[in-house]
Image (cartoon, rainbow, N blue to C red; front, side, top):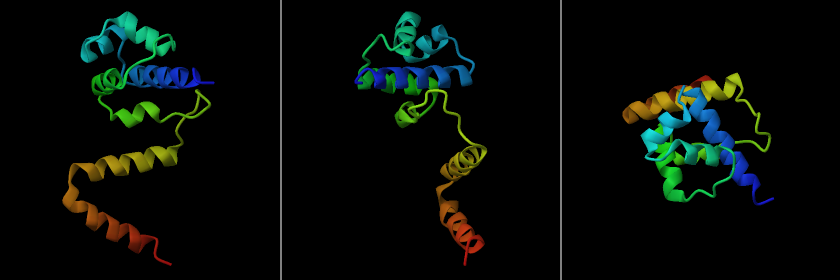
Length: 112
């Protein structure tokens, strides 16, 4: 049971790496690791430290929390609605002064 987290996080890293079109070698270069270490993580052969997880997240260009955004079903795919929500959140992160405006608009749209 405890090895499941290694499989889930390794699969998530692999999925994120492939989504970005990176090889294990390229991710290793970005994160400061040998490609065989990245492969070992993806295959759940390495018990990775939090510091190394942070380096890999940086190499992938994601927050460390994204490495734990997995389902117990490794083949889980995000729905179109979830993708839309994620895109809206990313847009709001670019200009924090517009967050309150967006919130007011959303409240008005969904007003009972």
